[in-house]
Length: 336
Image 1 (cartoon, rainbow, N blue to C red):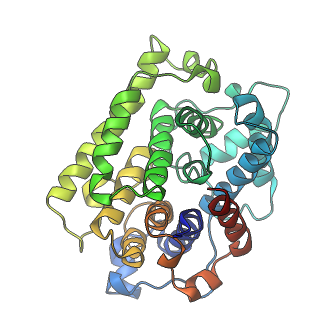
Image 2 (image 1 turned 45 degrees about the vertical axis):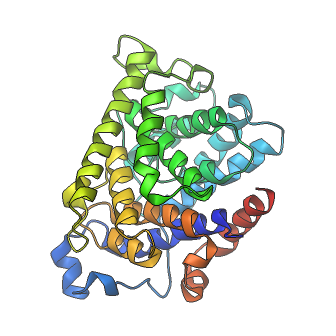
């Protein structure tokens, strides 16, 4: 068994830790320390960022919800909200977290109000989909549960329709790869999925969130997000048609600070090197954009595809939160 969940969770943390030192740096600055991107090293003390911390927060909330029965909006809301607020309050929350997450989690801590009042409907930052991988890995979910929960976990902080759609697509990509989809088929499968869902608004999961934006209808709200993600997939297709593996991937598909660009650029790094997961995360981390989030998502895709054997033992040993990541991986691989 390839242990897709273990591979994806380790991969996202490895990518996160590899990209942490290069985030906010230009290629020239990175090159001054490491001239050859293929030689980029994982730090010996592989500290992660809020990307992995919030992934684990979602994983804990998801586990608590599923211990109570089938996944429903009411079962998922309380434990995930509690975990996001606990992350916000934690002294370990000192890894350059995004302002949207900080503001939304502060509002979520005031539990006398509906969560929709905390959602930042103008933000489509990648903080929404950098943490969504568990929903592509946990076994036994229906497509509707996976999609609705992926959008819901985004909406707690990032309520822009593109953040919702990109989170849904990211979880779906992880799920497809974990289930054995061929990398060469992945973009077409994601495009078809986006087309099917383009005007679908999962009201049981999102409630009246769309009414807090300025669209004419929930369907128009959803369509706006899916269309931006489809445009990002167009840019990804163009980049793959004329691949430039030694160029900064952000030049082709975006720097990744926003959700649809993070998805497209991480997919680009993975699909440039589908048979070499270590090179894929190096390419994502050695970039001019949101390097930790790009490498985090790249590692999740590569790990879901290759499984736990994708990562060198010394990398796994060095990674922060290793024991908890391995525990969730074992839980979901065993029950899958």
